[in-house]
Image (cartoon, rainbow, N blue to C red; front, top):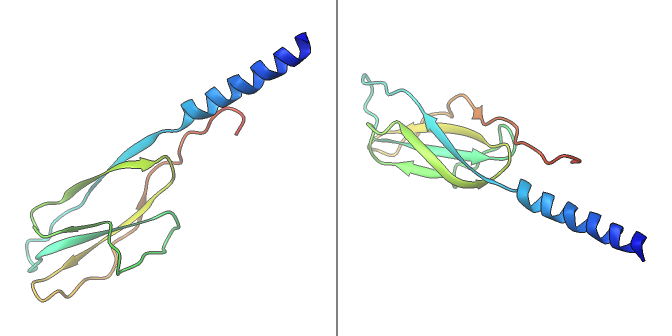
Length: 111
């Protein structure tokens, strides 16, 4: 009987640890603005796979060229990759910027 209780307690404590390790993260992106070009705004793209982005599905569209910071909120703890594009009044979009990513997420002991 004592062995069984110890096993159950160990499993229960493991489940608590796993649930405490889950976290959401906020990621802030900042970029520079080139005043020499006629930029109307920016599109921000997010992926969990490096260099794989869907131009039809931006994470955010910023219609003000003076806004050069965005915070993406409440993301499940993971590694995310981001690129940005600029677009002009005619909707012509630039190539992707350099890719940036957040640090590798912290893992629970035993993962």
